[in-house]
Image 1 (cartoon, protein in one colour):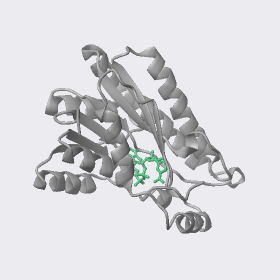
Image 2 (cartoon, helix red, strand yellow):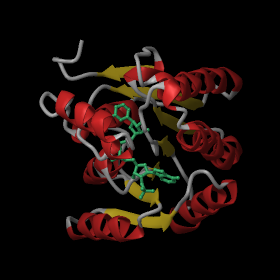
Image 3 (tube, protein in one colour):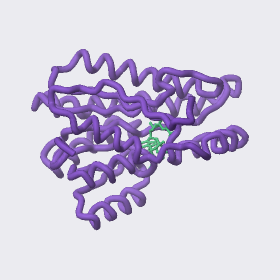
Length: 245
Ligand code: NDP
């Protein structure tokens, strides 16, 4: 695939699911990948695997809710590989619940990771992009960035917010800095594990047990975005399993 070889791509939430698949797939296409998340044992295993396959990868512990940690992650990437070409804001949580369950702590966590985390990623990376007047943000939203249903109210609100942030960012920055949202439908990952209500978790897992997209399908969508020539900005990609209506 064109325009991927040698690019430096940083991915948040790369210890499982979609982020892991993005790191693995893009490294397989010749990118240098930097993985961030809190579970460093998993990051170590994934970067070892990538290296064994001849890829180039590094990792650093990252909690996206902490602006200083995000800045350190970006600084680490630049120190390790000289620059950043693509920043993938992927880390996210989805503890679904009805509003009248009053899981206020979980609402705060979703806002902290799904919204503030993305803003921290932008704040840490944009100066690098502006300095060289190029770069690409890829923000992973969800079909919930345009759809709301019972139990997804707060989750969808966070993803609507990321869609708004991405559109505003796209308009504000230089035309050489590109901004994309990739909105997955139901995809294989550990995401349902973040649902604390046992009945809801069972329901979500049962509902999506079949017809899930493999995480690699989203990684391939990200690769398509990265592979575009510098004057082509794919603004949005929505990728659903065919069975998801
Ligand atoms: P996973 O639960 O498998 O992955 C989530 C990732 O986010 C993990 O690597 C986790 O790493 C990381 N993460 C969570 N909190 C933090 C934090 N505070 N700091 C840093 N990293 C954090 O789920 P997915 O792969 O599915 O989720 C990836 C993205 O895709 C999310 O934004 C999600 O909303 C979105 N999405 C997923 C869909 C699906 O069906 N799977 C559908 C639509 C969107 P660690 O715990 O090690 O920190």
